[in-house]
Image (cartoon, rainbow, N blue to C red; front, side, top):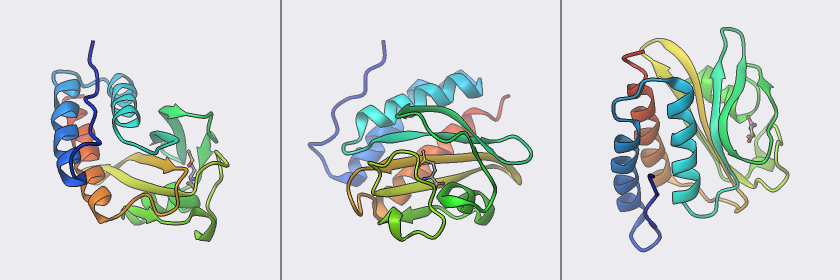
Length: 163
Ligand code: SME
C-alpha cells in the first residue's frame, strides 16, 4: 500500500515538491471526490510534521460541511464568511493564520490548535470547498507552506475534473 516517505530531512520547499509527486501518484486515475479527499488528507497529515488536523470542508450549495479528514472530530457546518474556513471560501484567498486566537471569529474545533492554513478550492468559478490544516504550534505556517499547500490543493482539484 502507499506510504508517505519521511520528509523532515530536507528543506520545506523540497518537502512540498516531493509531497506533490506523492499526491500526483496517489490521485492518478481516480476522480471520486471522497476517495481522493480521504487519501489526500491521510497523505499530508502523516507526511508533514507538527499537525493536529488536516482535512476538507465541502460546499453543499449553502455552507461548508466537513469532509474527509485526519485528527480529532470537528465542527460539521461552517457558514461562508465565518471562521478561517468561511473566510477563505468567501474571499478566495488562502488564509495563513499565525495565531488562531488572534483571528476574529476563529472557530475552535480542537483546542490544541494554535495556527492554521486554509486554501479555498475552486473548479473554475465553482466553489468546491476548502482544504484546512491546523497545528498545535504558533506560527507553524509561512509563505513556503502557502505555496506548497496551494500546489497540493490544486492537484486535488485537478483530480476532480473528470468527475
Ligand atoms: N478553525 C476553523 C474550523 C475548522 S477546524 O479548524 C477543523 C475555522 O475557524 O474555520
